[in-house]
Image (cartoon, rainbow, N blue to C red):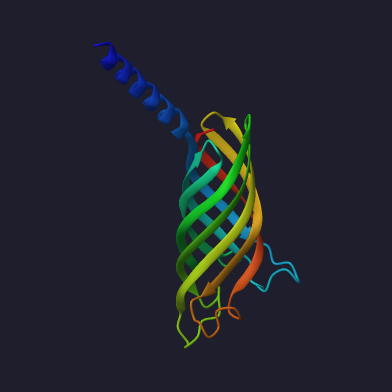
Length: 182
């Protein structure tokens, strides 16, 4: 009987350790951003606004994984320019209510000819989005975080003959509101 108690105790301790190690942070929310054309650092002339939603999980060690969806519009006219969905990967550091993270957002979607040059006189094309950002967040409540971010974004088509020449790149800035555990 004592052998069975020892086995149950060891199994119980192992389960508690696994649960404690798997404890994670994360959340989801909404964000808005703006492309910031800076001569010499971007090759766009139209300023675009981005609005979207996202969700992610973060391990205790700081790894961050999730997904996002974003719509891009012309900031002046409000006309639709594209939409993308994809994955988020990154690392974060937490200290009290503060979070600092470095993330890569990569996805696939649709872009109009206003957003990226499109060949064959089509109204738009399947395109990719790649974005590297640094984000600083403050948990104003245990379940609510406000963040500001800045980074660099590239959007282009999958046309192999013009993939690099047709890729648009620019700095970006924005804010995020996240609900979750902080």
